[in-house]
Image (cartoon, rainbow, N blue to C red; front, side, top):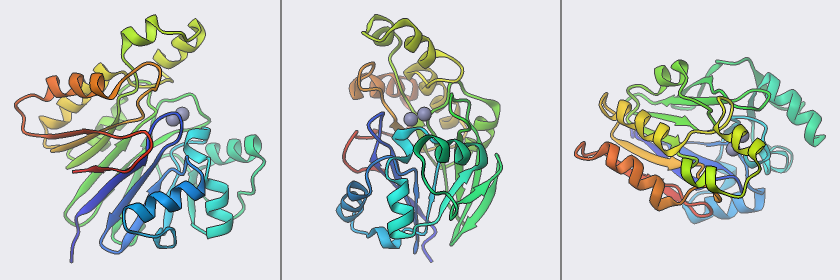
Length: 257
Ligand SMILES: [Zn+2]
Ligand SMILES: [Zn+2]
């Protein structure tokens, strides 16, 4: 049996996030931050179908992570897994029915098909936010976006994962010199905001030194970053380590190799 975990970023960044994860016949999504129509099209593009998705794991309730969640849950019937505080805020903010959702406490773990999933706390300015460590019998994958700083719990969970999706949100110079109002700049750089290219590169190096062989940089800011800058910062940090590094495209599927 094939226990390899395949990962494809379907959409990435403030305009919407969704990541496809497959192991054998088990297919799941992390976040549904694009319309259900776009999700269907993206899944078709990578050769699968939305009806094959057996769960969607929600990181947090910000719109760029839940835009398609309501339709996905109601019309397609895809089971949703979400942390309690995020679920309450999601229902309040978007006036959506969450009665069918599987609601968990922070740090929850569950098995879906051949995958074991462990969630971990991610410091971010939502009601709650989680990252994921996902394992099969012979493979492991870590997912961490929307984190204000590299928290110990995140490191513990990402450590030893063969492949990792990491947030590389902003270039500090571009953010500081850019058009955002000071309060928003502060929010992004705060411990409840997002990870900079340098923070990401330092974490990637730490993980690469301990066995991670493949990285996909994700959730890049459109205003305060470019794929080239994000790639170059992590690429320099990882130079000579023989790891694979790629940047998730904003709108189209990107494979984590
Ligand atoms: Zn967020
Ligand atoms: Zn986000």
